[in-house]
Amino acid sequence: MKIFYTLLLVLFVQFSYSQIRFQNIPRDARFPERTLSQTIVADTPYQGYDETQPYLGQGEYQIFLDNVNGVLDKPIIILDGFDPGNSRGISDIYASLGFGGQNFADVLRNEGFDIVILNAPIYTTNGKTIDGGADYIQRNAMVLTALIQKLNTDKIGEEELVVLGPSMGGLIARYALSYMESNSLNPQTRLFISFDAPHRGANIPISLQYVINYFAEEVGDAGAQEVIDQLLKSPAAKEMLVDHLEGHLLSGSTYEQDPSKILPLGAPGFRNEFQTELDALGFPQNVRNVAISNGSVNGVTTGSPGMTIIDTNLTIDATTSVDVALKFTPEAAQTNTATNITLKFFGIPISTYQTLSKSPNYTDGVDSAPGGTGSISDALGDGGGNPVLIEFINALQQELYCFIPTMSSLAIDNPDWFATPNLSDSPFVAFSVPAQNEPHVAMDADNVQFALDEIRNGAMGIPESKIGEGYVLVQNPVGEKIDIAILGNDSQENLTATVFGITGQKLMVKTWTHPQQKLSFDHNLESGIYLLKLDNGRSVQTIKMVVE
Image (cartoon, rainbow, N blue to C red):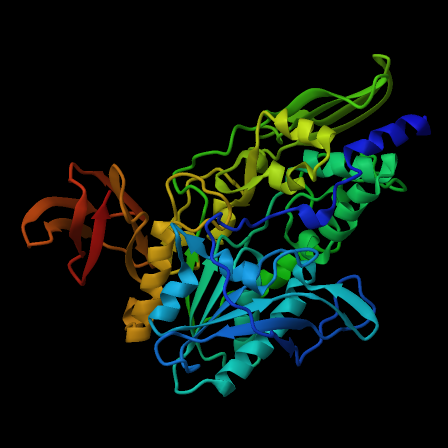
């Protein structure tokens, strides 16, 4: 039998986890001029769930001073996300901020803000080699804590910091800022922007995890084993993934599924422990917390529950082929065959591998949920130059999957991944949420404008009364409907929305009695800029509104 497994090695022989991408760099990205980065070492060590002693975390950072006065006086920290193997360096992180031929960091630097990029490299400490980009979120948070303290010491003037955390970086930033507050370490930070971060967990289709693990453990492929060891079994992946292959394995086996464990399960000893710890720490209380999501606010799904990802036959050589069929997790309370692999010799089946997947009663499978999308091609490094793996990618019937559910990016504690988000249940005070699902941490005109407005307005001063109460447009620019979210929990008898043209002409009026959380009304406005006045009888708020 081993000879057939040896033949199968051509599937993954050129595959390396360093080729995998969870954040893409725009094709027209601009890479900044690099100088020597500086090392930052945490003051507080962290001992992971599977470690016998604590270790000090390390990071590398570079300061890109503004183009106005060239003085470090308005620092904005931008973190890296999940990056096993440190495939993205500081220049790559900077370049990933590109949008529409421009760069978010360049725009801010031209307005007098200083950009500080923090990367998590591979390093050795106290005899242990740590892959920072896939390490414990908590240890990386201690590194960010040290950098915040250093910047607050080194900066000129009293301007408070802004922290932008894309993807896993959003969890690192949230943890660090909350940790500092709870330990009487003033972060001197006025704004935290969470960018499609998995506050309630992340997802990689369990069927895809199974098939890579099968080739690693049973076939014996070194490349697939590297993916399992360095990526899926990394501390960060085990902390974030809501469904992890280690939660399903049969006792004593490295790849066979326990038939009693077919519901979603996180990595034992990691997932539940981390989420409990994060929930207990909460969010920073003296910082304005806002969120950008790449997942649909309207419940648009990523494919459909239980759909086929791939069902194909791959020719290995003249005598050997393999049937591969993978599916998304199914509808609520349903069970399906998630992974089905059959090895054939001269067309005769000689070996099979199957796994089952079941969804809870309260939600369809997370693979197809509304959310920031991941790409299976990206997750397989575009095939790594291997013809058979490229054939596999070309045969995909479903390329995208839900990577960061909308509920998770908004930190809404609702176990139904498919429910329409109730923005009042989110701990964030302002949001940018698209109508359609977008690629994970994709920057576009809307969320860039949202982030710029938050950063600029904060620099001019935000009255405390505006934080945690009032109203927000769910989408701005608006589409066919004007969607309004009510922030805060105060009951209101009436709310009147009035739309004015930019010259002051009253165009529309809509009144609600006892309004509830999210409001929506149709409009026939032409493309342009308008003012939306919201009056609840006690206070008035005016929002600049753009109609596409």
